[in-house]
Image (cartoon, rainbow, N blue to C red; front, top):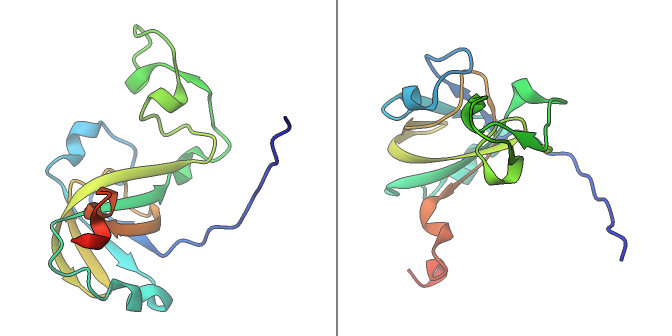
Length: 141
């Protein structure tokens, strides 16, 4: 069986505004407030997001483009045994996509104010969705 290779262009819908300007330890992001600024052509897509408690943010690890590894030391700890990248949270991934579950603090369109977004200033945002979308009963809620 041969696998077909597909490719497509992904357009960012916005960017991260954060006080953290360079890659940093995950723990620094836990209680960090940051903002996603949605680009004007996507602002209408925010309708109905107000009132949600948590969102899932999908973003691009833009500093790791062309730096993918299939084997990594978890959290960069070289004393830890190598693992496959798909079993880790490493930013050095084949498609460079990251996800972050965040608390929605406020929606001030076109800005989404969040707590806990693990992305640095200037990070391209690919998608935002209510975390409840991961519940198989979502359409019934």
